[in-house]
Amino acid sequence: MPPAVSMLLFIFGFLVVPAVADCECGYTAPIGSASMPVSNFTFTDIIESDFVHIKNISLDTDWKRQSFAVTPAAGRGPYGMNYTVNNVISNPILDVNNWTGPGILGGDPGLQFTVDGGIPTDGYVKVAQMDSSRTDLLWGSYRASMQLTLTAGTCSAFFWYFNDSQEIDMEFLSSQFIVENNTFPVNLVLQSPQSVQAGFNAVGAGNYKVVNLSFNPTIGFHEYRVDFVPGNVIFYADGSELATMNTTAVPTQPGHLILTQWSNGNDLWSFGPPTEDALIVVDYVKAYFNSSLTERQSDWATRCRDTTLPGAFCTIPDWNTPSSPSTPTLISGNSTQPFFFSDQNNMTVNQTVYHKSKGTTTASDAVQQTVMMLAALSFVIAVVL
Image (cartoon, rainbow, N blue to C red; front, side, top):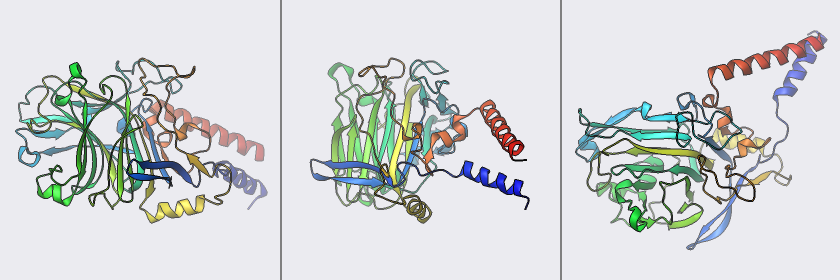
């Protein structure tokens, strides 16, 4: 092989192989509750999605918008549901350095989930759901920042799912919201074989709690969080513990994340359909977890070369103040921009983060990036030859 070509390959290899990075041994958080002693947990994998700046969710490889139908009988309601990809759309701020102001469609920026209003002529309400592409999420801390709807007649939910009998739910029924007396309940559910046998009723199985939120979830963005560790599930809102469940219903298998808003007229749950379009907005999702995949476990073992190195582990920041992109609040002179490891230098090597997803770039962005890469490569070739 000619020396020039050997040198070129060496330089190119040097450019594409990352140096030792921070957080290579994992992301840590103290997890505990009033009924569970606090322990420091380490999670090897992350998923971070900043929906305020993801330009086109249809191109995003980390998430899958859902398209399927549920019959009235299957959904146990007077109406069926048509899960429609066009009911999940991006409303981004195009400037990645800007965290304030409306999205390109107006209103609060983020990912919009819509339930169509009115009585459907075909008997099927158009609703919205999106699932994470990865299904290997086991023990972890799962967080979503959302702004809910005050339009009565829908169920909005953030949940972790393996199957109908291993499921962790945070569900919000807009018909239960009463502004006048600050009633804003969240329904916390662990589905189990017992609840499935009872017609998906977890009340009798002891895995269902209703907790009133201390804030109006339809104003601004608030973070909802589930810490799922062996034998325990802890629910939070804006960093405050809502409940801990440690029954036999705590899942033991890996699953995936789901964001949804739906309605089928069931007068025991969603009510509706809403009289007008009901819109919720998701600001971000952050997942810090241990993968069930042997491949990912091997990746971690290769990546984590020395646990004693400074920066080998990174602490997951606690939630502190709700973000409100359209009307931001200032804290000590800083905006309420949420923290992402993926926005920091060299903290997400070999991880699933939104900067690596096609959803963050438009076609022109991709062309520009390709041109820049070719120009850089041409320069290297010219120098070497």
